[in-house]
Amino acid sequence: MKSILRRPFALALIFALAGSSASFAAGNYFEVTYPGSKNTNELAYDVVYRMWIPDGVKTLRGVIVHQHGCGVGSWKGAVPGARDLHWQALAKKWDCALLVPSYQMGEKDNCRLWCDPRNGSEKTFLRSLADFAKQSGHPELDKVPWCLWGHSGGGFWSSLMLTLHPERIVAIWFRSGSAYGAWTKGEIPVPQLTPAVYQVPLMFNGGVKEENDPRHGPPRVADRAMFKLWREHGAPAGFAPDPRTGHECGDARYLAIPFFDACLAMRLPARVGQPLKPVDLKTAWLADMSGDEAQPAAKFAHDVKEAGWLPNERVAKAWEQYVKYGATEDATPPPAPTNVKAAAKSDGVELTWDAEVDFESGLKAFIILRDGKDLAQFPDKPQNKFGRPLFQNMSYGDTPVEPLLDFKFTDQVVKPGERHEYRVIAVNSAGLKSKPSPGAVAR
Image (tube, rainbow, N blue to C red; front, side, top):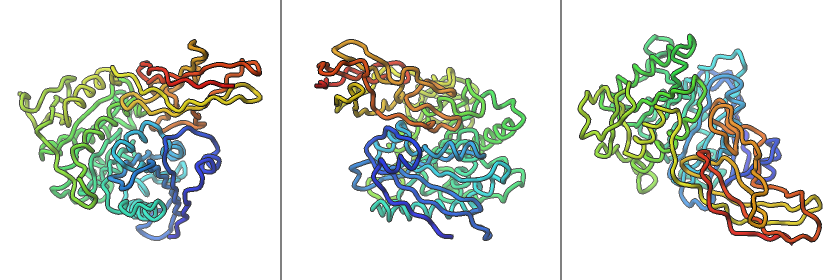
């Protein structure tokens, strides 16, 4: 199987090739493509892997994998996934790369030819890491561990990768999908379950509305059965039903990102090549599957084997909010934008700025101030069909929707020669506002 490597062009060129401009955190984008193969045990479909690596990282400590589900809409929706500002913030915090695959199947093609990694996608995934290691100058990509996030077929893929590479996996987030039902029914070969598979933190997350869906309901029953089996083996597995959604991802990221954050803090080794640290059970909280309250493990009075595991108090409190409301609360405002610049143009004053994503709640919009007074909100009407309105509109599968926006705004109601001071305020998805940025004057 031949690969097509795309080395890191200037970022502007990469975005032009993608068909849109976009705001982005400081970093480099890489891409590798493998054509489909007709050979047995090789991936049948074309696949493109896209990776973002934050600027200034000397040694990468891990890879966060955001894996789409089955169908044409899912893989196309994943195309801009590596440019997701919120997932980039998690990767940046832990010196990790963000990897978003895109398996290019047809509408009537068999999804399991990629979402069962034993049919070739395991090989191309590992090969992509080796190729990215060469492209990026980060040879450690061949060794570092992974966080796996998977929606539907992506969860199916992640559950089988767990059985193949448990020693490489920090944690897994299953959004509406695992392969457990398929292998217990004999639809696919039964994987080997070694003791190591029960050492990896897992979170099962699905929409309550899909449980009565003829298509997606039975797999959710299987997910519960997998959760039960793993807990009987003492595995650190949690269960987070989403009360607002069906099969779409909704606002799951506001719990998934803190979950991964806690697991990365707990398990990443001090040096690349060392084994992952074991789960620290002393900080655990537990919750009944049918309830919405969590307690420290030491105080939990019910059957521990039937309770959901949560890594620490912070995640437990976010879990309580999520299972009640389908979203999490946030009491801290986002960081103020920086590096605001104002340049006089023929059509007005062009403003540009930098912004850090609010780690808890992402970015919703920016408020532009002119001479200390509100001038505009950008974008004027943030959108998100599947959850809280965001600066980067979000898809069914938890990826940004193109076209993506720059951190750029033009004040067109300015006469030539006028002098104004501009400041920018960030607004997170919870509606909290940052302090105003330092001012910039256009002359």
